[in-house]
Image (cartoon, rainbow, N blue to C red; front, side, top):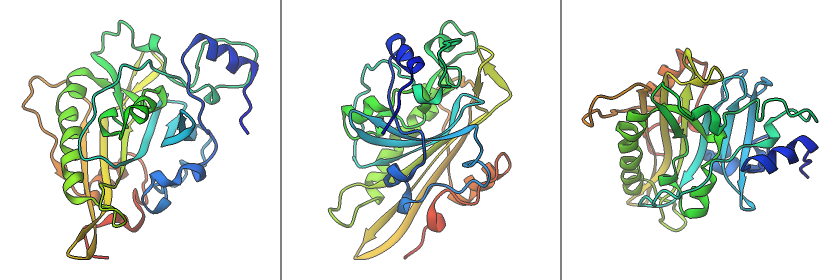
Length: 278
């Protein structure tokens, strides 16, 4: 049962909101490969980080580990089950009332997360960048669920619409070719997309990531043989001068090595999802 405080009700009346489960990942483990979330020692149990089962229109749609101090997600985890992208819906941006302190005094709305006001008229060339992109969703409802401030980071505009956008679309093709569910031969890949905090803030509140990353893991069935398959991507969150910039594929191990220079990661995927027969 979810309890909504008086302050949460007032916030709901003032701003579009989504009501999710801010407890553990146990109710949304389906969005992690083999049902196991990344192992990042010390982070899950730290009170500043919140595990969110993102619930929208009555169902869980994806999962997020959220940093309430930096006011950005650490990562979002989701499944790709389609072989082509869908059009971006025109949804309003939503907030998560359950991340806020249960107090009758409103103070600043949504103290622990970004709001529309943070992004208005900023001179830092950033806009809202999805971690779980709507183009990776299976339908309009799932796409709508991605428009929450617990799923976005301040992303350089030219990077968001440039090389990162092209990479998001290219991965749909890669997953469609290599990632299949043995049960029905449909596309199935488990994806993690995350951000590494930087040294600058938007509106003196919201951390602007220095790097962004994406990786996916899946089973590949060829000639009745099952193998693990993964790809990874890592890129700086910086302005791009033209549309020729590309994000090169790296291995999952290379991504983990990069992350370990910033945060300690034991593994992102169970079994480490190395490209091998299983």
